[in-house]
Length: 203
Image (cartoon, rainbow, N blue to C red; front, side, top):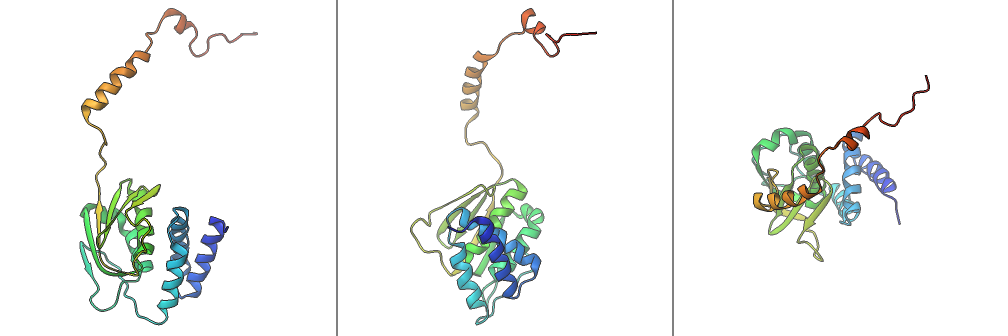
């Protein structure tokens, strides 16, 4: 089994050999490593994309807006991913972003997952009719289980979620009230055992 470090290094070198800059190649290495860590087909789809890259034309997108559409050729998932990663602090204010016609979207998803960690927010992604939840780059939940990831996504919808509790105020208050039973009032004996107590002064 290949180590994650070996995967990252090899992907970085292969991406450079395919024509990307060292900087972009390094980001690609980190992203594919992430996919393999989560047992997603990063190496498989990167291989297919790089083999296709020299035969087909893919579009780049330097400035991302709320609605992004490539009418002729699909977007390159790597340059699109790097742009998203670079602009995430601005894109966070948009809440919802849409992309149309993206090649090998699973590669793009890895960059979005890393962006989730940067802004400290979960990101909901819909690839055509399939959904994914990116959780601060810690894990990825999806309903793609046992299904092949598409090579072309007609539409990718990205929703940046606000941080909210998963429980009600009532549930929290009930739990907190129970926890109060462990609180101990400070007594004289506790004060004597506080910081510094029991130390021997040999002077």
